[in-house]
Image 1 (cartoon, rainbow, N blue to C red):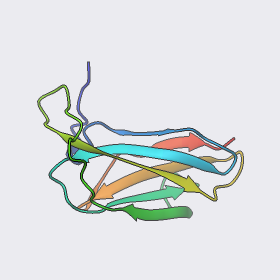
Image 2 (cartoon, one colour):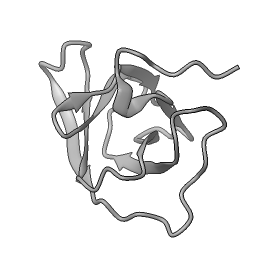
Image 3 (cartoon, one colour):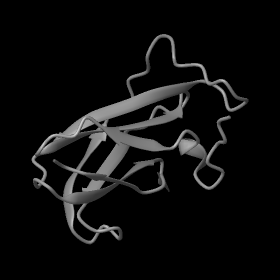
Length: 111
């Protein structure tokens, strides 16, 4: 059963990473469909984000048919981006931000 992230309501479905290569990763999250702001992402080599190695924004394009959640939190839009130019064989930390609200921090390793 899905339990929304109470501490980060704009990121109730959490964050995820996948499809790693030696120098890239795909980052994913979901935000409320009505949120029309850019979603910012940050990738760092440390969990306090003192050594940022990638960052950027993902525009507010809304799908015509947002993914419907199977809980009471309402429709969402999913956001994903391939981040490239990362260090090979390294652990990285990442987070998203929308309208000043930060997601929880995720972690991944490149190959």
